[in-house]
Length: 71
Image 1 (tube, one colour):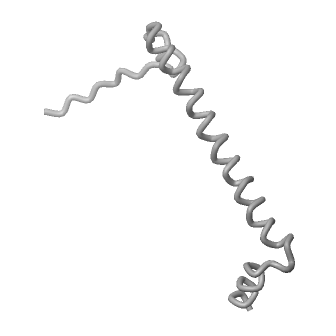
Image 2 (cartoon, helix red, strand yellow; image 1 turned 135 degrees about the vertical axis):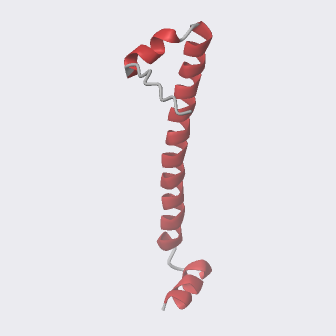
């Protein structure tokens, strides 16, 4: 038996069915998603600074070892 129901509603009406606890959970979920995105960007910036710090010290043994491997 193939019963296909087409009970589509508009996206903005989806939130009209939310009660107070749903709205609170959506708020904290949004804050968590923003925090997760910011942490990813912060990690990229900090890792970039870490990699740059290897090149700033020309007398570093690490830089000499990396140069040997790269050439």
